[in-house]
Length: 233
Image (cartoon, rainbow, N blue to C red; front, side, top):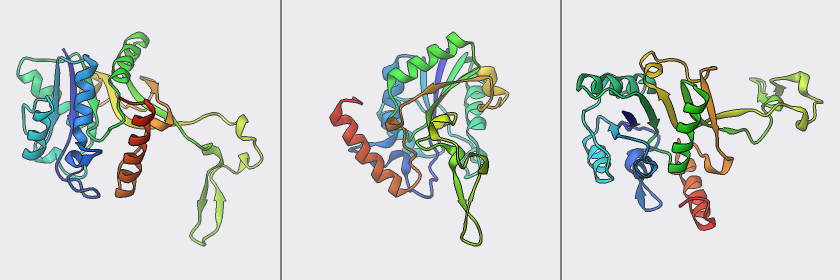
């Protein structure tokens, strides 16, 4: 059984009710649920939440909410891997053991059904334990600088002061959309950022962290532009 788990706790602080807040006319979580269903990759799409309102919104988009997430996995310090492990073990106890699992974030309005499907195929083809979305940094991280306590500038990597940008190795970061994985990798809480993972590379215009209201406004503008250009459905 292939399972999609969408973590969506109710206690977001920086953007209250973030998971179900209206984004371009639709509850944020709806984009993730619809992408999961449209991918036709999953036998079940479930939302792991501690919040009754989020649960009802999730059901309205076609997801199931078979359990209430326990309090110890719903605070500000709960990591994603324990939440996924809990969902897997809950289904195990119901006799519905999954073989592959995709953790899909509830705040990923740019996620596409096709990307979910292609990433799964890549994980299978490469025999990796995980496959997750990444994108490239817009600026070479080897040329990054920091502001010191004395309000002065220092380079993180001074040896690259004179290195041409085109001679520096390209760097990538987690795009924060979804994480495919074999069930045993999730159960053992195996590290994502390791040689056991294969990256599914996204173009930068399809990636936007949404942690602040400023991020939210920018993401809505980007979504409208991408939709008008036909880059997203």
